[in-house]
Image (cartoon, rainbow over all chains, first blue to last red; front, top):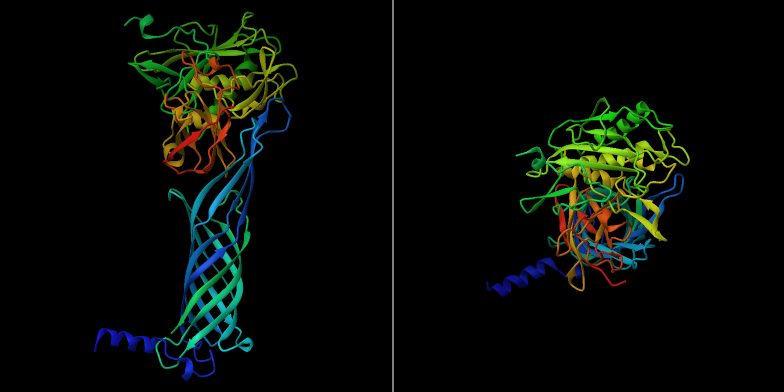
Length: 232
Length: 334
C-alpha cells in the first residue's frame, strides 16, 4: 500500500463522516470516554495593589513622608492550555489541565518627592498552572447538531517565574465557569469518536504566585478560552 | 613599626570624613591599603567599650551609659550581622585620646556648633583593621535620656545609635530628603539611622534601625546566613552614555516596603547594593543633593550633580543568594 493510501485510510478512520452517527453527541460523551483539548486562552488583567515608599518624618510625631507611590497590575495576556478529561458518566467528567501564559507585571511609579518623571516599570512573568476540575455536561440543554453546554469548577497549583527565571513564586488557583462544546465530527466507528471545539468563560481566584502583599489576599479575575476537542 | 606609623591618630571626625569602599554600595568607612580601598572593620568578635565617668546637666554618667548600651544592643540584635559590643566599665579616660581604649563620653566643644557627636578611629594602615574607636558627645548641647525624649533636648540613645554605626565602620546613608534654607538645610525626612543630619531635638526616631542600616552592617559583619538569604542589585547610572560617579541609588522592595540606598562608586557609574530582601524592586537614581558632599565623600567629589532623579524602567528581580542582572539607568538632564 502506498504511503499516500495509508494516510488516506488513516484520515478516514479518524475523521469518519458524521453521516453514520447516531443522535449528536450522545455516543461521544459516554462513560469511559477520554477527551483531549488543546487551545488558547485569554486572561484578564489582575490588580496587584499599591505600595508607598515612605521616609520617616524628621519631627517626632509627624506622618511619614511619601518618597514615591506605586500601583501594580498583571496585564491581560494570551496563553495556551491543554487538558485531558475522563468521563465518569455521560454527564460528569474529571479533567486535568495545564495552562501557560506570559503576562506582564506593570508597576506605575508616580508622585516622586523630587519630581522624577512618572515611569511604568515592567517585568514579564511566566505563569504555569496545573489544575483538576470537575465538569458537568448539561445534556438536557443540548442544542443544534452537537452543542453541549457544561459547567466546571476546580482548583490547582500555580507556579510563576519572573523573567530571567531567578525567582519562582507558587500559589493556588481556584476556578469556576461554564461554556459549550460543539462537536462537528462524530463517529461511533472509529477510535476518534468526536472532533469539535470547546468555548468557555471562567472566574478565577488565586492566592500566592507573584504577589506584592505579605498577606497574599485572594485575587479574582476572569478568563476566556477556546480549544480543539478530540474525544476518544 | 612604631606606634605612630602603625595607626592614624584619632582625628578623623566621621561626620565630615568618609571614604568609600567600592565593592558594595552604601558607604562604608574605608582606607587605601596598597592602592586598594578596603573597608574599615573590627576583626575581634567582641568589641569592648568604656564610658567616661562624667555626666552633663540632666544626664548622669549612669544614665548616659545605659542609653549608650541600649544603642549598641540595637546593633547587636541585627540577626544578619555578627557584632558584639560589650560595656567594659566606667573610666576617667577621655574620648579621642589615643590610648587603645574605646571610650565614649561627653566633651565640651564650643567651637563645633553644629556637631552633636563624632566618632574617631585608629586602624592599622596595613590592613584597615580597626583597633580603637572613640565617640564624644558635644556637651554644648542639651541632652536627655528620657524614654520618650524631651522637647528641646537631643536624645542620647538616638545619637549613640548613629555613632555606633560609625563605630562599626558604616559611613553615612543618603536616604533622606532635605531642603536648603539659607546657608543650611532643613531635614524633611530620613529612612536610615545613618542619614547624617536627620536629628531633631526632642525626637527619638533614630533609636530604631531601618532596612538600609541593617543591610549596611550586615554587609560588613555578615552572619553565615546573610549572603544566602539576601541578594544584590548591580548596575550603572549614566547620562548621555557617560557614567556618573557618586549618584545615589535607592532600591525599593515592592513586597516588603524596604528602602535601601547606595552610591555609584565606580568611575563608570557602576554600583552594587547588597543585603536586599529577595523580590521585586523599583530602582531610582538621584544626584547626591540632600546633604553636604563632604558628609559622604572625602577627597573625591561627584562630578555630575546636575541630573534629574530617574526611575529605572524595569522591575528588578533580586534572588536570594545572588544578584540581579546588570541594569542601566539613563538619567536625564534637570
